[in-house]
Image (cartoon, rainbow, N blue to C red; front, side):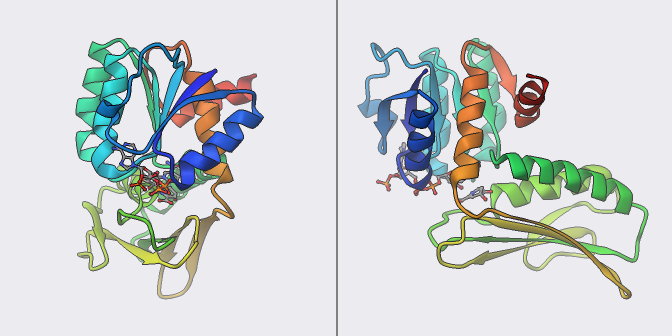
Length: 239
Ligand SMILES: NC(=O)C1=CN([C@@H]2O[C@H](COP(=O)(O)OP(=O)(O)OC[C@H]3O[C@@H](n4cnc5c(N)ncnc54)[C@H](OP(=O)(O)O)[C@@H]3O)[C@@H](O)[C@H]2O)C=CC1
Ligand SMILES: O=C(O)C1=N[C@H](C(=O)O)C[C@H](O)C1
């Protein structure tokens, strides 16, 4: 498969290594405005975007307009997600966005949803989310922490939203810590006067995120439409 890397930083480089080990070819790497690059004549099968929040929307939709399916893991641009979906559908292209491509985190998402369902009637427990990342991260809270909060909100009608740091009684506080070189840690805690329930996912490196993104790209090639990591995992475990 011929892959274009939109963003060639920490994740782009890790994806390159994993994709090549799986027999794919990197035919384009960009770290600047996509308009400076010719997307034609490179036989790009899939573009993988791990860039920066302010570039993601343009990167993704330019690919749709050039009939190139896109896997995007860039966080911090989701105000424009619905518009990107619309353009994808109009252009008959294909798209997978995930705040976290790691297979382990996608299991953790299922665990979080189940736990939220079990805890929604237990009013003595206060829930919060903590995320820890390296000091170079541009956005806070992390995209993964926002996904975790959204899953809890779907199950708990007493909670109205999430807030970074100081939250109201009916909001989920998300605490974002920045510590040098931490690849990504997420914890969801339910605290009551008598006990505490915690679930944590700790990434040991970026390899898990990168592998998930390459597996998603393999899934997306030759498809049309909008997909999620749930579709990718269902396909993976079926085969
Ligand atoms: N969904 C997931 O599983 C994961 C998501 N992420 C997310 O992926 C994104 C990238 O993370 P990471 O690799 O650590 O960040 P880096 O800062 O290491 O990489 C971002 C790269 O994008 C480049 N860039 C700048 N402008 C553009 C542009 N217009 N088009 C394309 N590339 C551009 C930067 O170049 P330069 O340095 O020259 O400015 C840099 O090389 C972040 O949003 C992060 O949150 C990260 C890990 C996992
Ligand atoms: O910026 C990172 O590094 C990461 N970003 C993603 C996020 O914002 O959730 C995923 C992962 O935790 C690493």
